[in-house]
Length: 307
Ligand SMILES: [Zn+2]
Image (cartoon, rainbow, N blue to C red; front, side, top):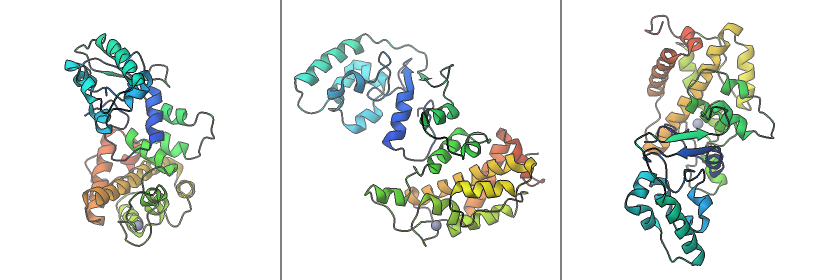
C-alpha cells in the first residue's frame, strides 16, 4: 500500500481531473522504488513515462500502468515486457530512448519520496492542494468549514470534492452515462445526488437526530437546505461561538460517515443500518477527540473516556 499518496485510505473514486491535478503537482524521487509507479508517476528526471514517451505509454495496458512499480519494472527490465501491440517507428524510437534513461537509474535502500510543488518545503498539505485547484478561480465560501476545522485530511478532501459535486453519486454516474442504482440505497425513496445524501435523505436526517440525542450541541440538523453551505451558515448562526469549532468537526465527521455508509451499501452490499452507523460515528468521534479534535471532545458525553 502506498501511504505517501494523498488519496491513501480514501474510499472514493477520482475523476481524471482530480488525478491530473495531483499528478501535475507531484514528483517522486525513487529510493527503493517500491511505492513509485513506473508508468504513472513523475519519477524519471522529474517527468513521467507518459511525458518522456507518449506513444509508447499508449501501448501499456491500463492495469499495468496502475500496478507496476519502479522496483519491479527495473528488475530484469520487466517494464519492457509490459508493452503490448505492434510498435511503429515512433514507439520504437521512444522505447530506445527510454531504455537508455531507465538503464541509468539506480535504486537505493531509502524510501521513495513524494515531492509536492505547491508548498515551499515540498510537503503535501491539503490546504495547498485546495489553493492549487483554485488557481485563477473564485474561492468558494465553504472554505472555512472544510479547511479550518479539525478533521483528517482524507475527510477534508472528501468535503472539498462533495462541495463541488465531484463524488460519484448515482446522479453523477447517470450524467456520465454509467451504470447506477435508480434510487438512494439508504432510503430507497429518491434519486441519489450529493444534495440528497447529505441534506434531504430521510435516513441521513434520522442519523442526525440520533446523534443529537447524545451530542451536547444545540445545532439544527440539515433539513431541506438547498446547499451544504446554506445549512452550514444556518447551523453556524444557531451555535454559540464557543461551540462552533465543535460544530464544524461534527459536520465534517457526520457527512463523511454517511458517505462511507453509503459506499458500504453500494460496494459491499451492506444493508443500511441506523444503529450501526450511529455506533460507527460514536467510535469515530472518540478517535478524533483522542487524536486532537479538542472542540469535538467538549461536546461528547461526560461519561466517555475521552475527557
Ligand atoms: Zn436517501
